[in-house]
Image (cartoon, rainbow, N blue to C red; front, side, top):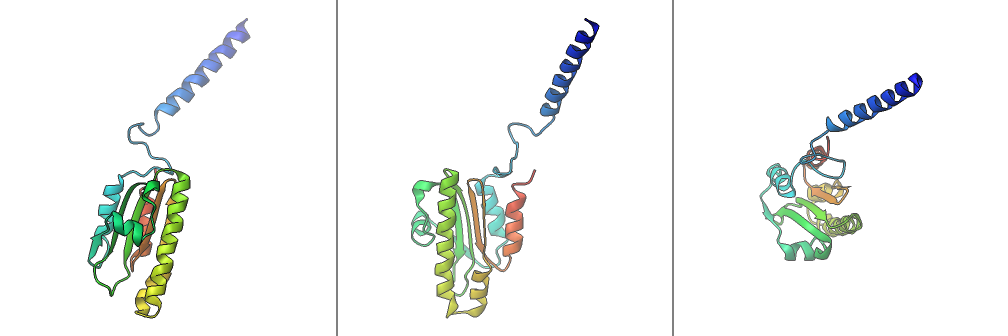
Length: 165
């Protein structure tokens, strides 16, 4: 009987320890997982677009569909910025897709955008073509990030930081 009480006490102590450990994690209202960023899409877009060195304009839904090849039925939220002058290839796109499958489709759409850009810049301005060739594209859960920029590595690192705990 004494051993049974010890076993029950040990089990209770273990259960309490697990419960306390679970309660000391990230808060449920602002918790961050590998697939959910620490900032809203608007906040990310505002911060990232401020780091682009050339003047950009925000793309509207028509541009998102026609130039970036996005199916807006797959998109929950999107922000895109493109160079205002035709001598720069700079692009920045952040999309929150409706599902992970939609995010994969968005990723393919942005690859097509990059292929279109490569074709445009290949014969036009070699330094811009090089930027297009060194584009960054990353999918994190339902979020897709795409950029063409002289600061592409920095922009990607900043985007990735939004998904770190």
